[in-house]
Length: 117
Image (cartoon, rainbow, N blue to C red):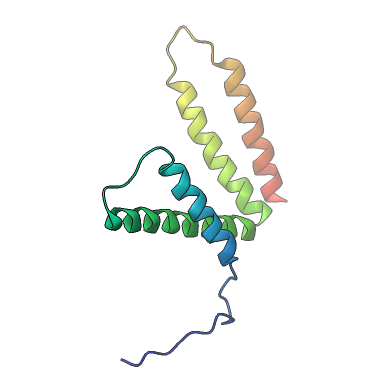
């Protein structure tokens, strides 16, 4: 199997600020190990590896969120509100839910109208 390098400017590949990702990884690492020490060097590497992976996942998530259209964001919000509506229905009987239910249903209706346009 030949090892062909894929150039960083390949079509369709998003560009990430590696310095920002590395800064975030170090920030996460310092936060995790602020008041304690890992047992050995392997624990250091494993911990930083986990922080770096988390920083890359954060950068990719933010890039995906930035590429979403208004309709996709509205659809995601409708899904979140539908779940919140189910949580409201599961409240204890003594709690009033009518006002919360009306507010959520009104927001869902306005988002659905917005996505249809």
